[in-house]
Length: 117
Image: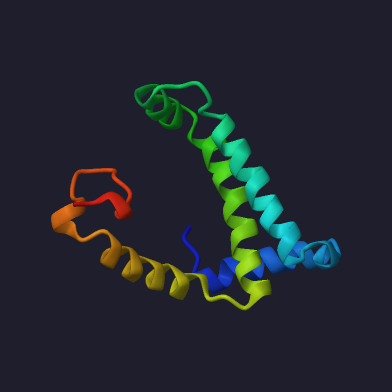
């Protein structure tokens, strides 16, 4: 069952507020929590090669999804608390990245934009 972003934000808000956790969810604490949860996601793949990580993700979808969800929950809440429309921010960032990484220079390469020729 897929929900809209607004519905997911309401679920996050309700979960948080039922536990009286808003007082702990300032931007710094949420940013730290994003980093911590992203580290837990990364730990799932530590020391694996690319193919091993792909296989692990396919075979452990629920575990990977849980860690991804932890990151997303904190990220969405940070956006709400900071007054940032995350979808608009993504669109803006993609537009900026399109200028930094033009297709004719960036296609098929992983070079940073400052080193593209």
